[in-house]
Amino acid sequence: MVVSLSVRNIIRPIVSLDRDSNTRDGANKMMEENIGSIVVSDSGNYVGIVTERDLVKKVIALGKDPSRTTLGEIMTSPLVTIEADRGLGEATSLMLQRGIRRLVAVDKGKILGIFTQRDLQQKVDEVFRSLAEVQQLE
Image: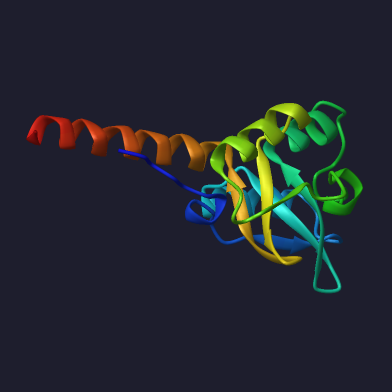
């Protein structure tokens, strides 16, 4: 049995806030949505990403005021993207190579969603559970 999945099979919708939003709003949005990152927009275009780790390292650890520090000040930019039809192995290699846990999935330059290490782990677990069930049926 060959299992072939692409990034497209795992992406989730992007949750974003404007670059001028403060980091407190960003943290609250992450908490509300149960996610680990916010994609940052500027005039309707996605321009960067802020992760939980960014909040800790670039705001809390430095004693900055989350109400006065904007997402634009701490975002990582530019976004690292991958074509949505690329395989999971290629996506994983890119994340390891770049030392990141999230990729923005695109199709011909159009942003489709976000691909995260957590979503990948959940999909791998799902695939292995399915394979185990099939083996039990044989």
